[in-house]
Each structure stands twice: as C-alpha cells, then as structure tokens.
Length: 396
Image 1 (cartoon, rainbow, N blue to C red):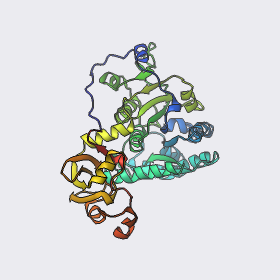
Image 2 (image 1 turned 135 degrees about the vertical axis):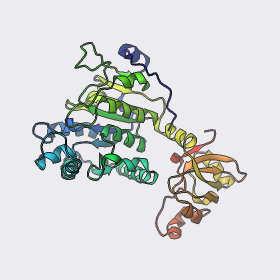
Image 3 (image 1 turned 90 degrees about the vertical axis):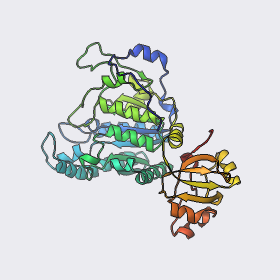
Image 4 (image 1 turned 180 degrees about the vertical axis):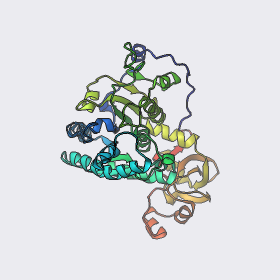
C-alpha cells in the first residue's frame, strides 16, 4: 500500500465551492468494477424490523443496469442482525455478543434470500460471501477470498458480502460495514466504492447542528481537516457513522479506488448518482492496479527468491505472467501469497511478486510445464507461479 501522505491536522472546514472548482466530478458510467455498500437503516424498517422490499427492488434495478452494461458489481450488505432480532423477538437497544451472533445466524438466511430473489428476478445469480477481519488481513485467507470474488465476477454472478457476525468476536471484527466495504473494494481491485447512506454526503459541519453547513461535492485527498468533520454513529441499526466513512475513504483511495457517499434513502439511489444528484466524491490519483504494484514493489518484505531464465525474463518485461517452466531456482522459506524477489540468471532483480505456491510446491514444479502441475502436486493449481497482476517489475 502506498505510504500515507502527510496531512494537515487543523480543524478548519474545507470550502465546498473551492473544492468543486479544482476537481472534475466523475461519472458512474466510467467505472467497471463497483462495490455497493448498503446499511441496515436503509434496508430494514426500524419500526417493523422488516425488509424494505420496494426499496431493495429499486436498488436491484439500478444494479441490473450496471451489470447489463458489463460492469462487475459486488454488494456489501448489512441487515442480518436487524432482521434476526425481530424474528427472535429480541428487545430494542444494545445486544449482548451472544445475542447478536444468534440474531445474525437467523437474519443472515433472510437477508441472503431477499438478495437472491431480487437479483434472480432480473436474471442475475447471487452468491453469499461471509468475511471476518482475518479474511482480509491474513495473506492466505485474503488470497482465497480474492479468488472467490474474482471467480464469481467472471461467472457474472454478484457476490453479496457481509461480516460473519455469527463467529466474529469483538477482537476480530470490523465493527462496521463501511470499513469492510473498503477492504472488499481493495481485495477485488474495484475502481469505485459506493457507500449508500442516510445522508447526502459529507458536509462542512453536522447539518442538524449548523444551518450554514454545506455539502462538499469533491474531496481530492483525505486530510486531517476532512477527518475532523466526521461525526458519530447515525442510527440505532448502524454501527457506523461519518467517521467510519472517512476511514473507508482513506483505505479505498490509498488502494486506487474512488469512493462516493450518496443518499440511499431514495428509490433508485445509483441512478441518482449517475444523474449527478448531490453526493460527495473522494478521488484517488491512482488506479487499483497501480496502487497494488506500488504496495508489492515498495512495501512488502520478500520471503524468498525465484530465479528465471533469459526467456522468462524477456516475457515478464513484455507483460507476461511467470510460468513454472521459466523458473530455474527457488530459494527461501515462504508460503503461498508471500512476496518473493524475481531475479535473472545473473542475479539482477527483475521485480517482485506474490507467489501462488509455497516453497516446497514451487520447487517441485519449477522448470515444468503448467499442464504437469496436477500430476506433480496431486491437485490442480494455478498455471502461473506469479500472475502479472501480482507482480511489480523494476523500472515499470
């Protein structure tokens, strides 16, 4: 991940008019992989504890429009606990951890069913993915989750993602789906994260407290001044608030993902974003791929070395992945997903990459054709030892 730029720690409110003159507001149609985060307060009726079916159907129509033009869409949806507590007859207010987990276990079935039925009505297959903090922080689990999301998108299914509240304790949870959505966007190399909220966007001051508060249409960089504006939690159903949305913006933009906070209380909220309704855009100067390569090449510690022959070195420089056939030597003790140095036969470093095999398996398949991997390892594996998307070359 790129190094965090030094930012101002002052609390002065940014001028929305000045900011909007500096940066151009993006258009929804320019993005090809979009993560949409839906909060509990939007999806669940507070009084009845029931799903807002008409609202969900309208949102899914918007999603189907994006999906129909070829965009990959991933959904991060809250609502399991809010639905489950009603079905179990649990009282309003804060729940004990074990009660929250029980409510999540019951509510997640209803939540998944609702999304599946709504998407199926528009000819789209839904897939359920439940994550914990460890799934995005531990390298092996991160890669497994990333590959699952990529495969679902390749099959034109829409992953519906939530935190696995049935097993996540306070020590291993995100605590809100804003940050989870940002991690998912990073994991999926999304170019846009949409946070649907119960407010139009980021204001220069809390609108309920300051009649002169103005919506900030564009934030070019998350600074200390921007962070100082953030308020507290917005509703009893939500564990997040503007503060967690700003934290999500920092995570997303550092990973090369644009983010927008938009009003989700209306029908067809994504169509309104496309129509340039009031909202707040958080911009990034990078792309997911550029940010990922900077992170691989300049941040991660290498755990080993793979030496490649001259033909493989030329292929890498032309944009190819590293195949086992081009590897002549494997050194070090590393696991799948670790960062390794790539060197040519003269010992010069060609680049670095995240390797798809642990050291033992890499040694077994080096110099061999990819079609032999299953026979050599006893199980099918990736054709590439290091995929080009997981590689940062020197001088590139």
